[in-house]
Length: 417
Image (cartoon, rainbow, N blue to C red; front, side, top):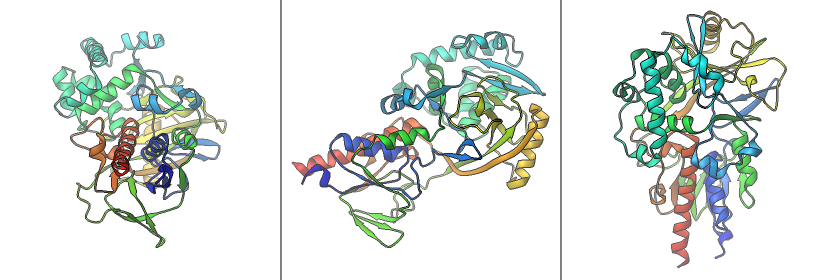
């Protein structure tokens, strides 16, 4: 049988599924992607609403991600870089801190910031140097502890943990107690320290769009919902049955495989609200952090502090809520508006859109950097991919898609012998 005649199906046109398709294409195969929605991207999506670009949740690309460097064309994405730091709002006052070695404009605000004691500034420098010298393999071989315990063991004061590390990394890990694995903390911190946090000019969905546009012999079937998967058979919601030589499930497999033999996936959630404002209180492209206790706002960011493909003319403010304190809908909007005024002195013109994202990040323990291809294999003809199998990052999504594709290619190679 010719390579292109094998029926290889990929379920899910998220980043993992697209990378799996590209990897198979590179070896001469012609897979088919089954996607339940009307566009690629999975959890990485951007809407255009009333002339503004709205990403589904505040997401960034860390340009140091090895897999992103391998699979993406950064120049074509027209990446817009954040400054390496943050604007911390305490008692209504803004304090800018950051890495002055990478951006000189942050030197004096950081050096003279009273928020962070001198001993902690020295520790931050030591942490930067330690992680720059540490390989990714070493990071993921370390014994796991919570990020909070890691920071305490490193010698950081409660002040810098509460004023900077907690609000900053709560927004990344989408949990407020820094219970996330220290491996993930070291990895993300290293990525921040060795590259830029960036957004494509057209929004985060430009990433999966680019990956999809690179595909030549892959067919993507949109609005095609899968009901269940068995070896050799895919049952669609519309009653159609597809015969498959190999299937890669690049989405949560627990509801697709009968008697799924793995732990059920737990998800972290968040809310993301977009407001139109007349002016910016943070002029530079910095994330705004709110370290105050008992607030719903975790971080804010003006997307219009970066160049965007679409802009309705005013300022676009993104607000991330990690702990919504049982508030939803208009109650949450009113609480956020009140906190914006009280802590940031921000008056909003109007709400553009509110996103509730119940499956924002997988809540994982014993995290890995990647899977070897054989670990992607679920059964004779079913393979699994997705960041849910390794660690919650764009880098992991790409690597797991590639691993699953390599596992299929390896199985096909044995058939050909």
